[in-house]
Image 1 (cartoon, rainbow, N blue to C red):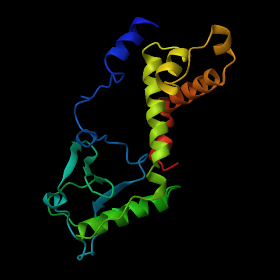
Image 2 (image 1 turned 90 degrees about the horizontal axis):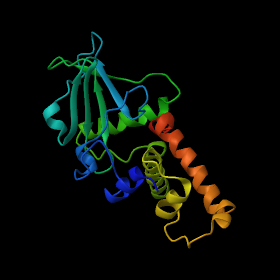
Image 3 (image 1 turned 135 degrees about the vertical axis):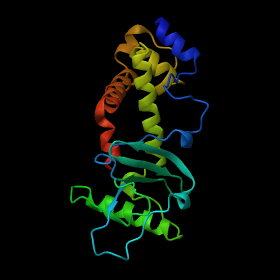
Amino acid sequence: MGPRWRAWLSAGGYPFPCDPDLAPGEVPAIWAPSLATTTVVLDAAPDGFEDARPLDIDALEPILADRLLADGRHLVLADDQGRHRLWLRDTTPGRRLAITIPDDDHYELRSAAASRLRRRLRGLPAGRPPLGCRPTPFQRRRLILLLNLAEAALAGAGPRDMAIHLTYPRMPPLSAAAWKDSPERQRTRRLAKEATALVQGGYRALLAGR
């Protein structure tokens, strides 16, 4: 067990760049709208659409994240049934807006996200996000395990350390020979490889609802 791995354990096993004392809702990430299929794109409505409505930002509370970037304003809205993500391309106050849905491979998911937001803006229950963007309890537990394994690998842990502390915390002591041929070792190595792929770009599949 290396010194970095011991420090990782003593720190609670979560050396994240964000303050771990903050609730997850306080530090939501802003993802590229092209990757995050639940992001609703809002732009200036075409001329002639006099019935199109402007967006009242003050009516969107509670807002979890609000960032003005070079390409527009990005917001994350809290909702008991699932967060909303918005990309406001035209930030002119009072501008009538239109929802833009790119005709890509994720059209159905983007359309569902737009419908949820529209219901929210009308004061109606938005409904839950589409299934493709809503992990099951099992998937959540597995993703947490994979993230922990990725952090452990960065801290210098080997497969046996990972198995004892993460994948098989109740695993009985094994001799070196028994560990070498054990299914626990094989599965831990496989999960560690999957965890590395996840943090190196595989997470994009999750944003796309896959």
